[in-house]
Image (tube, rainbow, N blue to C red; front, side):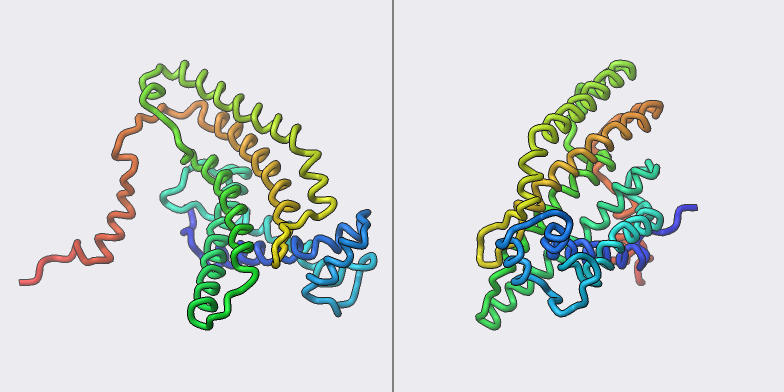
Length: 281
């Protein structure tokens, strides 16, 4: 029996993954400098942004103990998250290993939305209540929104919730539907291949020199989002192939306007407002 989704571990693990990932990304200049990178400008930048400058160095000349622990925890938390993620009642029923990975990415995306809202609320409070706005909230919001947009695309592909027009597709026989599915998957894979092929060099250069945004806060948005675009698009292509394989022998689905109605959600709302209680006399 499927365990209920929404347990505490499904909140803690994605949040821990986000924290460790954020720490490693912010301190990535330390890894670049110690693992083959060079440049006085990058070293000076890391000296300005190092959150824990007095921690003991355990690798090279820049990587401290917190950096190393955060780096090691990223794959550990990812594995724990993939193993413990549970399918919510409204989510698609495919539940292979790679499907669970995409759903865990979806959970991380949901937590990123919570973090983004916290950043925005903090900025509103400091700006309009304390009359002292931050220098980092706007760029951090853009940075987080970029990750949310990309990761949500992978989750949408796994959930088959991307925009599709069914009026012609539903009228086709199953064999012709298979042909359309193969063509659409090939187009996705082709797009991902050429995007990766054409953008890999630029993405690697932006990452290697740790290209910054150029604002007062100066986050490494170009250095991080460009490689993430290529990685997520590649994962979307893989997920599209997985969807094609897992959906190949399923019964054809006839889509109607009723598909947009979630009966379970309506029942929960009715129970919350007491609509199912007998009338009081």
